[in-house]
Image: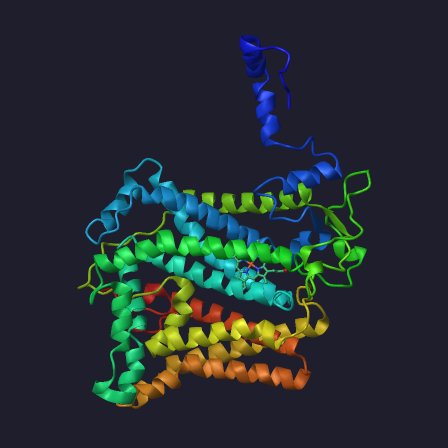
Length: 516
Ligand code: HEM
């Protein structure tokens, strides 16, 4: 830092003012040019935004076909959503009387409002997709396994938060789309009554009614519910997301960085950047942590830093490339396509069909038989099943995407079997209907327990067990399970989106829907 000790008074002040730019730079950036290992390391751990990264990154983590950049893309989308969401808050009015008009104002009157709203909407949809894909990649590379069990469960919390953020946001414009989506949500909240009434009749406690009122703040959908959704969407869920994201990122470091196989050779790393500094890289031969003083072990101990390169600039170039691609994609989408807004919410004119947003359409197919089964039972079973994965599969992280012939074979065969099961089940229900059509007076409890959703879930469970018994490999059974999950989710979503029309009837194409 340039000092001015000789001059006094006005002279010193003048000298300090002349040295001001350099002094500000020295106070902000405390390292020299980033052309030595030491400066690069200091550049990373001396920067509040970069220091969550390790100063060195394994070249395996930089393979394009390992993470596919999906975690970074999800984080970038969350950042974009936070910024655009704050801007939207300036004009949005969270009351049933004013919400719709305020969204129309944002779209048609406020300068720049349309593009901000479009970016917000398309980023939200894209984030749901990238988070789901990120989760699937974590399973397919075996990265949920030890020592990453804890981070896997944190990831599941992030998934739930992402879906909750997307859904609460979908309802805010108070148009027909959002209003009838809340109606579906409220029916699901009330659905424990479906079971209680079927078991105990009229004397059953009104647990569902209580849950519905807790969700809506009233017996009916109105301003009270909208305000709850608003507070959840703008404060509670984003704050929770930030906390859990911080834990998620911190945990990646504590788990020894990204997962990678033990048997990496130079061929595996083809196409990844190499160390670009001629000088000897800063490579500590041993690392010491506080963990060494207490009982227990650290996953980092014993892992040599070979095949690692400086995070600056290699990892950051990679991350910036992902962020730029995401930005470009949402900007293009926002310029080319307007975010939808249908007519103002009208409780007396039900949307027919009233469809949930795409990421819940698969569940809505099951909800059409039983709100409790599709809205509460099956999602709970699916989440518990996912949460248990690293605890039933005790192998250690493999880090290879479907590594080995048997993993690839099991995955493809399972996709095909799951596809046949889901398509077969849908074809059956479209052709023959289900129990209510055959026995109109049947107790609803039977349908809660036995409907296409639960039958498919039971089939998938049996199939997973069959893979386990025939291959004697828990990892292959997990691959079979996740293949079923992916196909079930994708096919039911597609089916709900394209082939379900008014009254939730089957149509080949939306153009065949009757005019009403
Ligand atoms: C808001 C949502 C999420 C964000 C922003 C996020 C972000 C990230 C990032 C940046 C990474 C490192 C780079 C990468 O893998 O692309 C990562 C790794 C990881 N994530 Fe997520 N994640 C999210 C949701 C999830 C979900 C839903 C799961 C699983 C249920 C999950 C489980 C993991 C695990 C286990 C790792 C370590 C992977 C490894 O070591 O190979 N994350 N996440």
